[in-house]
Length: 90
View (cartoon, one colour):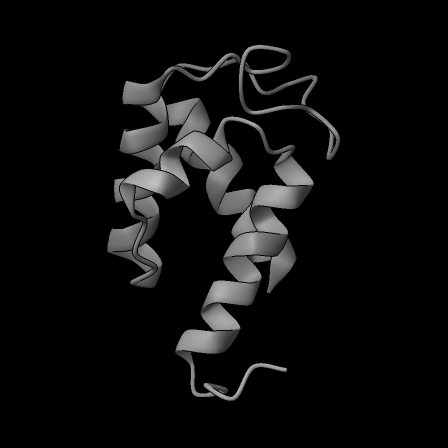
Protein backbone atom coordinates (compact mmCIF):
# COMPACT_ATOMS: atom_id res chain seq x y z
CA UNK A 1 0.00 0.00 0.00
CA UNK A 2 2.84 2.41 0.78
CA UNK A 3 4.24 1.99 -2.74
CA UNK A 4 0.84 2.82 -4.20
CA UNK A 5 0.50 5.88 -1.95
CA UNK A 6 4.01 7.05 -2.78
CA UNK A 7 3.37 6.70 -6.51
CA UNK A 8 0.08 8.59 -6.21
CA UNK A 9 1.79 11.45 -4.33
CA UNK A 10 4.59 11.65 -6.91
CA UNK A 11 2.15 11.47 -9.85
CA UNK A 12 0.04 14.22 -8.28
CA UNK A 13 3.09 16.42 -7.77
CA UNK A 14 4.10 15.83 -11.42
CA UNK A 15 0.62 16.93 -12.51
CA UNK A 16 1.11 20.05 -10.37
CA UNK A 17 4.28 20.75 -12.43
CA UNK A 18 6.80 19.85 -9.75
CA UNK A 19 10.02 18.17 -10.86
CA UNK A 20 10.13 14.95 -8.86
CA UNK A 21 12.86 13.26 -10.91
CA UNK A 22 15.41 13.56 -8.09
CA UNK A 23 12.99 13.07 -5.19
CA UNK A 24 14.02 10.42 -2.68
CA UNK A 25 12.29 9.15 0.44
CA UNK A 26 14.22 11.59 2.61
CA UNK A 27 13.34 14.62 0.48
CA UNK A 28 11.50 17.26 2.50
CA UNK A 29 8.13 18.39 1.22
CA UNK A 30 8.74 21.91 2.50
CA UNK A 31 11.40 24.57 1.95
CA UNK A 32 14.43 22.32 2.37
CA UNK A 33 13.30 19.98 -0.42
CA UNK A 34 10.40 20.20 -2.86
CA UNK A 35 9.50 23.64 -1.49
CA UNK A 36 5.75 23.00 -1.56
CA UNK A 37 3.96 26.16 -0.54
CA UNK A 38 0.79 26.11 1.55
CA UNK A 39 -1.45 26.29 -1.52
CA UNK A 40 0.37 23.35 -3.15
CA UNK A 41 0.14 21.33 0.08
CA UNK A 42 -3.58 22.09 0.26
CA UNK A 43 -4.01 20.99 -3.36
CA UNK A 44 -2.10 17.77 -2.67
CA UNK A 45 -4.23 17.15 0.42
CA UNK A 46 -7.45 17.62 -1.58
CA UNK A 47 -6.26 15.15 -4.22
CA UNK A 48 -5.50 12.59 -1.50
CA UNK A 49 -8.83 13.23 0.22
CA UNK A 50 -10.64 12.65 -3.09
CA UNK A 51 -8.76 9.44 -3.88
CA UNK A 52 -8.42 7.85 -0.43
CA UNK A 53 -10.99 9.66 1.76
CA UNK A 54 -8.26 10.73 4.19
CA UNK A 55 -9.15 14.05 5.83
CA UNK A 56 -6.64 16.74 6.74
CA UNK A 57 -7.18 19.51 9.28
CA UNK A 58 -5.55 22.94 9.41
CA UNK A 59 -2.98 21.70 11.93
CA UNK A 60 -2.04 18.89 9.54
CA UNK A 61 -1.02 21.36 6.84
CA UNK A 62 1.73 22.87 9.00
CA UNK A 63 3.04 19.43 9.94
CA UNK A 64 3.06 18.26 6.30
CA UNK A 65 5.58 20.90 5.28
CA UNK A 66 8.00 19.53 7.88
CA UNK A 67 7.76 15.91 6.69
CA UNK A 68 9.89 14.00 4.24
CA UNK A 69 8.23 12.06 1.44
CA UNK A 70 8.62 8.78 3.37
CA UNK A 71 7.22 10.30 6.58
CA UNK A 72 4.25 11.65 4.63
CA UNK A 73 3.57 8.28 2.98
CA UNK A 74 3.86 6.53 6.37
CA UNK A 75 1.37 8.99 7.88
CA UNK A 76 -1.05 8.39 4.99
CA UNK A 77 -0.73 4.61 5.34
CA UNK A 78 -1.40 4.89 9.08
CA UNK A 79 -4.50 7.02 8.51
CA UNK A 80 -5.77 4.59 5.90
CA UNK A 81 -5.23 1.67 8.24
CA UNK A 82 -7.15 3.43 11.02
CA UNK A 83 -9.94 4.45 8.63
CA UNK A 84 -10.29 0.94 7.24
CA UNK A 85 -11.51 -0.47 10.51
CA UNK A 86 -8.73 -0.83 13.00
CA UNK A 87 -10.15 1.90 15.21
CA UNK A 88 -8.50 0.36 18.24
CA UNK A 89 -5.09 1.93 17.79
CA UNK A 90 -2.46 0.81 20.25
